[in-house]
Image (cartoon, rainbow over all chains, first blue to last red):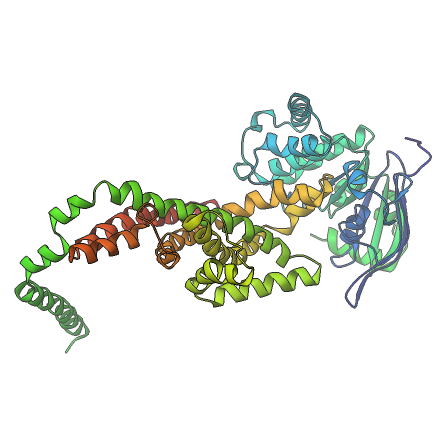
Length: 248
Length: 262
């Protein structure tokens, strides 16, 4: 992959649901190996941006390039692009009818056409990475929220993605389980994974992110290194949001 | 009167009504005649082994074939009903409303007798089995299509999103992720449909039967007329219950399990 081509490039992105315009012109880029945290009040459109990047939401207008490929072009093989993008959801979305190992191998086998042995090898490596080798044969319902989210991350990693999207990965977790998931994400970041993370975890954003983007009302209000955006925000709206989030 | 005495009196009344009815039945029923007409051991013994080897076997065979046909058609109809292509949706809706609104008997007669008239000599192959299974399958599909659609829509949207974001095609996501979960949800209602189908095979008499193609009801009814005795009905009732009761119990168990897993 040419490192000059940005993994994610968003140009003039608009998205409406019916009459409600959620995104009102987003221009945004994520560079290779960069960790970008997207913060903002609920309803600001931050999750929608993320979901547009792998076309879970179809943009109303604008273009999105993933590794230089225009995914909004009708002719693009979106399924192929999606295998290179890992997506982690707020509610984990593990497949409840499959074991942990089944969750990790099904797309490897069906999409990447890997053999059973190869898929199992990769799955076990990824389970080791998230510290859950002993849970391979469990069903998701038997795992804690934190463990489920780590399995979900491992499931994405099995596809060897070039970039990872996280949609509020810790928002559905009990407070004491947040740390184990953030640790896995921190590990990924330190290995150079390109990551776009929608989050409310200001501590994580401050420590791990290369850049923080604050979104409100469907536009990017502020975008810069965490030291700047979180510690000394330039805009009144950013300041108010951060005060509210960090108040308690 | 205190509340407690009122309660006691109403309880006592309800129990005594029950006891009085029981006494009247015991005193006035003609047990000897009842036994002779409905529980005649000789007549019952005469029905063996054909009641099992022919009648019960046919009932099960007809049911299974109709159910399988119905299930396949129902799945197609359910997918059509959820299709973004409007005409598919319309066709599925029309089909479902039509065949849920008609008596199964009318559909059976239509398949067996109207089709050959309409399409000069065309016949559904397979005799009683083929015509009946197609007819009942058409009806069952209409009922099961709605059940399957509800089951598919009960699977959280995030499941489809997770599957697609792993690069699976819509077809892969549907067959590997959504349908297996949907079927878990709909196994209890589908089993109920199976029980209804078992009973509906009794309508196959309109198709005309040979001695080897009779199902339970036709078999029992013919013997009743032949022996001028009600015992065959008692026997087939017992056989029906031996088939349906385990199934309805199974549904109860599955429903309890499903409730626990949630």
